[in-house]
Length: 265
Ligand code: ADP
Ligand code: MG
Image (tube, rainbow, N blue to C red):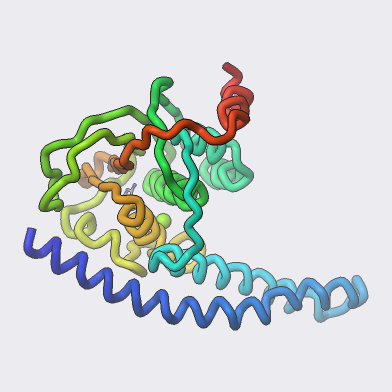
């Protein structure tokens, strides 16, 4: 436990530092990334400059993504909270263009959702929670290069006893999200480090920047939630996220309707 607390402090420090850098970079980047597109509109179709400009545009987009992740992680991102039902966010994410792209990269990965219809509401920043879900799903898919099954589930749960790695738990009602895969899994050593910003076992570039789980950690902390991992090497991994329940009702009725439309209920 001592080691866990040290770890949390270290991450806090790295996060603060990275957040400061990201804040400056964000301003600088916004003065750069919009230009390739403008220039592209104005140069001839056959110009040899198109290719480098497109590369510039792609790199710029990647840089913006990393900086956004850093800002989220350092909790400097805009956090407007809203009363939502976690199921709605999950269904929306599963139907997002981003998820279609992921599925096309991993055609042999099946995603199954088992969502509790009586799930209570939570008061959260929907975009940040959505990002957590995508990060967990993409990690799960990447952990199954030969294909496999991702199981997403939600339920209401009463927490009272400490979980591993936590000194105390704020006793009360929580919404529990589980994302499970039957992929490569991870060792204890890896599990201890995955929330560190820039920690990755993947080749840099295509998939990994090592910020995905740092973002998840920052978001969960930011929402007074908890996170837990169950994993063994070769057998897969399950991530559990807990968010405190709110008694407030959904603000917008159409949220419920949109959910029904998406699930076909
Ligand atoms: P990245 O995906 O860019 O490597 P993340 O922060 O998302 O960064 O994850 C960090 C590391 O945690 C991964 O490189 C991987 O080693 C490990 N990891 C995360 N999720 C899983 C999973 N579902 N199964 C196995 N290992 C995982
Ligand atoms: Mg990742």
